[in-house]
Image (cartoon, rainbow over all chains, first blue to last red; front, side, top):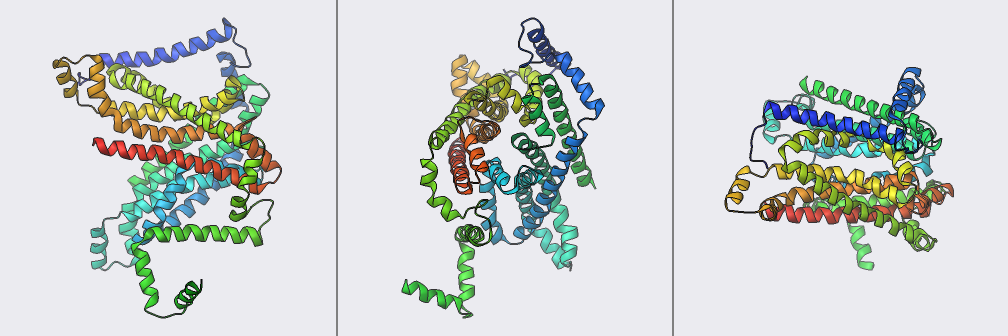
Length: 257
Length: 273
């Protein structure tokens, strides 16, 4: 049990080994399944095959058109969500009454799976980028607006009173008191909004679309080109991880400034 | 009717003392103002859909509500809703079992925690929507792939909260229970179980929203009998009324399920602290 409070270096080394062993066993089972046990190539491609396909996908640059589509949709969706979310959140946060009226309402809508709106957006905006942008913007709007309300709404009253008594005007108040106090919370909301926008853009491409990274995975699945599909999935996961890492880095940089 | 009309005209007239009075009363009751906002939005939607927008694409809320019986009269829709509910229930039960089981195993053993928690977090960080086609490839287009995708979304939050909850138990409690001669079962029943309850219910709330997301994603992606089938049929037929009705039914189901687990969390998390 947990009675031993500290972990020795030996233990840490052992668990590192366990992790490597876990992944190694997984890879071994995978390759055994495809070579010895004869699992269908359509269900589970050979890992070496997947690797070759991955190298091919990355080096040929065949992913660029789809990546452009996805990034374009993501940028539009996030820009809409950010401008609407921050401006609405700021206006709501200016009054305690408005916070009390709108915050529970927004939180309640945020609790339903917004992916449900996708069929409506497809009906309204078609299968093109419009429905993806709309869904991504809707989903990422909520964390942004809620965190903006929380950020600006919870600024210490004393700071505001002190700044006022020192004769700060509205602009100075915003620039030197409200913004620095609210920024960390808003940035966290923006980062979360970015992540969910990215995921929902890919999700709506997967469900109903003509182009984009998500659509390409479905295309390969429908053509039973499983090895290339696995490679593409790994590639997309890497891109998502990369974008999220960039945004986290950006968040930390802005906060530090 | 008559009295209401009179009072309304009174309000409409700019009598100076009346207006601030109403504002002040509203200010004390944000719930009423909230209701007003919702009604106003519905009204805007109603007017816009009735007079300005194309009926093929958007339907006024009154029409959507009035034709809910037609939606349920469509052959296959009630059973599709039941099927979705069944998928969510099955996926949730499996997620709770798997999440609590693995969470306990990983949380109670220091070595297992050190070794496997990074792997769990890594798996949880994968954008699962990318592997949805694999689920369909392996489990088929039927019920199984929906349940499996729901479990893969719902399991991790439960696992992580249970692990975190168990980890927070003070080691002193284990030592004293052991020294009083508690066996393994008694240790679980009287030390671990009461302490994991709040985090377990938090995990179940997060797990439920995960399960709903996973099942709905898989349903919308490909479905031969569930609600995903009907959303695509209604979209192709430009049947905005039925589509909006179905989407609002699903949203209502999702809200109800979320609310049940949220209430449970509030109840148990509070009573233990």
